[in-house]
Every structure is written in C-alpha cells, then in structure tokens.
Length: 267
Image 1 (spheres, one colour):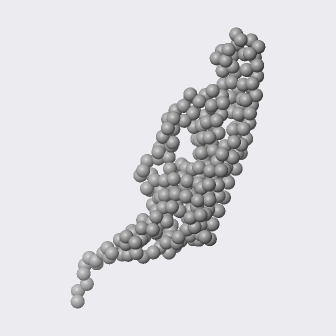
Image 2 (cartoon, rainbow, N blue to C red; image 1 turned 90 degrees about the vertical axis):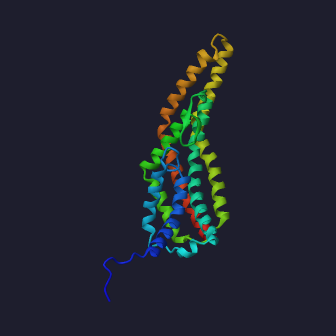
Image 3 (cartoon, one colour; image 1 turned 45 degrees about the vertical axis):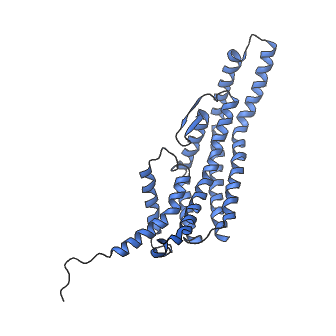
C-alpha cells in the first residue's frame, strides 16, 4: 500500500480548536469592550480583536473547555451568554469607578463657571467639560503607567481557574458588585472634588459680599476672572493629592474585581 505524498488535513480537528478558541475569547473580549482604555471609541476595532486573540492564546490547553460539538449546538446559548456576562460585569465595574474622575471634574467645572467650556469626548460620545476630560485622561495615564491594566488582565485570566467556562456564575454577586461600584463612584468623586469645590464655594461667598457692597464690581468684571484664576491655581496645587486619590481608586477597583469574580464562583 502506497503512502500518500500529501497527508490529509484533519479539518474537523482544526475547526474544533477554533471553536474552543473563540469560546474562550468571549469573556476577554467582553471585558475589553466594556472596560476602560480599550473600551473607548478611539480604539479601532482591529486593535481590540488582536488584543483579545493575544490574551486568549495562553489559555489554550490550560483551561478545560466544553467540547466543540456542545458549543456549536443552539442549546449552548446560555454558555455563551454566561461568558459575556462575566466579562461585561468586570469591565463595567472598572468603567463605573473610572467615572468618578469625570464626575469630580464636571462638578468642579460647573462650580467654577467653566461648564460651558466643553468638548466632544471620544470615549463618552458626548459633550464633556474640559476639566472632566483632563481628569479622565489623568486617571487613564496612571492606570497604564502603574501597570494596573496588566493586573486587570491577569485577574480576568485567573478567573478561568475558579470560574471555568461552562460554569454558571452567581448573578447576585455580579449585581451586587455593580451596585457597590456605583456607590463607590459617588463617594470617590466627592472626595476628589471636595477640596477644590469647598474652596471655590468660600470664594464665591466672598465675591458675593464684595459685589453686594460695591455694585460696580459686577460678577463678570470682578468675580469671574478671580474664580477662574483660583480654579487653575487650586487644580495645580492639588495635583499630588489627586494622583494619590486616583491611585487608591485603581487599587479599590482591582480589589473589587477580584471580589466579584471570587464571589460569583463561590455562589
């Protein structure tokens, strides 16, 4: 019996591997889509796809995946939905916490009378005050420069160990994590903006007393320049404290991400 010159390709085996690979990539892709940084509209879709594929490669052969025949069936829709929910819940948790920076910047801008100084934010897709955009970019810079994004990726990859693909997560833990993130967003936003807003409030009260005692010193010729100048000085002086607050925000977000996935697995 002669041996064929060109061996036959086991296309069925290759298709099975590709099916399992794309099934593994669902959780990571959903996390990148909803998370900060890669989830922004300024990130092209090919970059997200390549990042998802690269992060999925280390999982092949190390994580137990349901058979390809089971994944390809219509009855496996709940397995796909579970993976998407797990990834989206983690990404949205970090995104909600990141909104604390935009919230603080928006309140500072409105208190200083700079609410009209708005530009289109590509990540939000809406008009956002410039101070809020600066705070958001500052937080994103700290997120990348401290390698916190790598820690977040590692947490998502580790979630495959105690929450393997095909397992049903605890929905109560995911919902509670989102609610806790929303509560922390307002709390952290208030702590970030409180020093500047409190000082501006006292300054506005002083300007009101002066304009009341001397009507010729109206708000536009006297109060507005002072308020803007004081806002710029306060933002400059509070940069170290703001950076520390953003660093604590990132640590709280990463710890919350670990707690969400751990409690979802234990449920």
